[in-house]
Length: 312
View 1 (cartoon, rainbow, N blue to C red):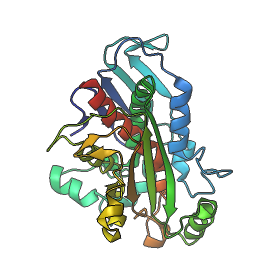
View 2: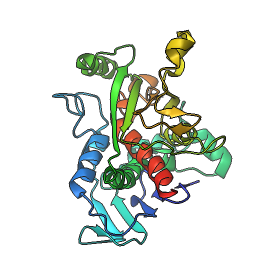
View 3: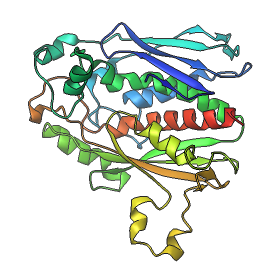
């Protein structure tokens, strides 16, 4: 499926090395003044041109060369006039300016270990070998645009979303993240990481019992992000070692799948990039994809919550 949501609906399109990627966002009410600078800032964080870590740039964190060189200029096709939403579907695209399919020429007749190459071929009988095609993390730029619009809409209601990198490998001290990543990059390898997200200002009562629990929708959305391998909320997996009298104080902002009015908290883990020089794969790859996943996590969280709010 390429569409997400049922009331506030986002559809994405495009492949890593096609002419463009983009999306259509339906359900945005008329009259929202879009802050394009906020969208630009989020895209720059996703690309690694800027970082949420102090005094650290994407080059220091092993961000792929392509991500740093893609301008990610958004072309607004419909739904916006003079920066204000019209209430009609918002369509946009981001042209792929720095696509270099020749970097992946050797993959025409081979599959990369740890990627979706073989499964796409098994499912469709054909695959786009140019950097993974639709399975490439390049697609997440469109999510960031749509999710940022959703976040701006939520902010009008006092709802704020903030994600951050909290662990790289076994390291939990942010001041050491860059040196850990640099070490793996120098070895031609990669390392995974954990992103934590907090949402403040949520009213009590969002979500439905049984099959439409907020955490179920969040897990569905977050696990759809490339390289994401796990999701937990509240006390999460670490709570297994806590007595009930302690663990029951860590709701994570949700009880029975419904928001309780406190800060919503969850975490997600991203695996190391499987394509690395050490694995014998040429191309432009990240040493730690979790760094660039932060704004994508925020974007998908905003799309989930905007869909719940729109359903009220």
